[in-house]
Length: 151
Image 1: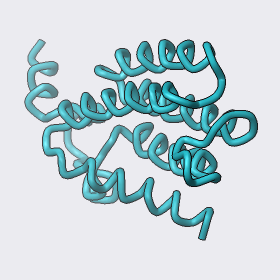
Image 2: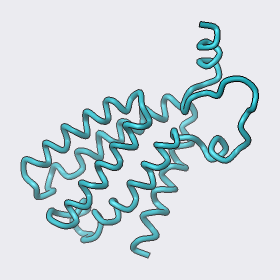
Image 3: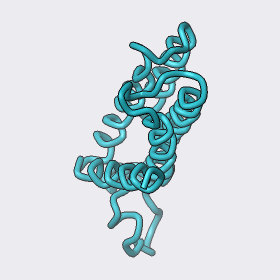
């Protein structure tokens, strides 16, 4: 159960994020989540100045994630690596739950996979794709696609 629940949490996170309707708002909200995840260990992670260095890197990746699902996915993978470091050498993300950093390290790649897929809803991921015309980029509306084809 220790390894299954983090995967379930990652899937539930992605599904809940799909409730944010506009793809651009969904991406920007997740960029903010990356910035927050980057600062999660600041108040007691046990790695001194390295906590600040990681927060700076995560903030930069979050900023780039405002316009890129790929950067958001990279941010979750960076946080995965930071969780592993904390599980092995630092303090857990939840002080009273010893294996919380390990759970986070299992959960984060699930979210990263969803981000690398463009943060799409289940319908967009598994539904039928249109065969006519040019396909929209992940997170791109048909209106933007129409504007691109006019230019």
